[in-house]
Amino acid sequence: MKTVSWLLCWFAMAGAVVASAESLPAHVDVFASGTEGYHTIRIPAIVTAADGSLLAFAEGRKDNREDPGGGDIDLVYKRSTDQGASWSKLMVLDDPGAQWAASNPTPVLDRSNGRLWVVYNRWEPAFGTAESKPGTANNQAWVRHSDDHGRSWSPATDITKMSRHFEEWGAMFLGPGGAIQTRNGRLIVPAAMKPDTYAIWTSVGDFLGSLNFLRAYVLYSDDHGATWRRGALLKALTNENQVVELADGAIMMDARQSSGNRRWIVISSDGGESWSAPVPGQAVTAVATSIERYTSKAHGDDRDRILWTGPAGPGRKNLVIRVSYDEAQTFAKEKVIYGGLAAYSDISILKDKSVGVLWERGVSQNYQFITFTRVKREYLEEAP
Image (cartoon, rainbow, N blue to C red):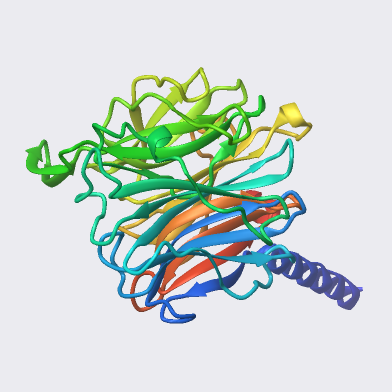
């Protein structure tokens, strides 16, 4: 009897180990810097198409690791039709010309018609955020759409004068990362602007350094992307940001801070047209993070869930995914995706309701890979 009991216990433990292993995150490197004609590949964005295929976007930096203004940058992408297990060859979505830069891919699916949109920036040679001037085409905003789940794309359409105050703002930039569509059909694209003056060297409290004057806002469209309008600027120095629709229909923005160690959170009750007073958000280094609606009781799920990904630190290290059950007021659970060098990330919900995270990964140095990680709910919510 003791032998039988021991065997039953062994089989039970073995089954538990197998089940646990099956729920562990699966990592696949989608882009690798130094390959496919690009010195560095950065700035990930991911979207799930209406047919369930995945599209991973990034900036292909040909000359060096520099942001726009420092070299030639193409907008590139890959597709996956097996939930991220394998990916297509690299394809170029936008090559604006020699020494021009295409940047900040920000995709969104219009659920009403299955059309995919990508909003992004172009920059004239040698012009980046700091250098771009009001009343010029140094900095531009463009859109493309796809009606076949990302297999082909429309010609690019210039929306620069819809997206920024052309005569007064020096530049604007999108996202980066995914945009959203609200329950009433509005497309909302996160953005940030630069006034004529970019930054000053200053001391504020414990902070000593360069303080930039960027401020976040959103673009929105109520006619399925035909035209775009600007919402109000946040009343805080903020830049790269993401938005999520809350259970009551309000929009929450989670925005990167210009200084300090806490992000800023604001709420809009009118779809991004105006914003509440900012309050401090999660403690994290200054970096682009992601926030995404996962489940909704209004859509028949067992409870409301919002996900957040970002590096827990110190600095750009230790990528984690957090789960909130109270509409991003607090995050009750945290699981580690990767314990090493990690920076920007973006989330998309897959067709089978697992979670896809596209993120920047380093081994010996930053930004060596853009990696896709598929996370199952069992892993997110399992006991420690």
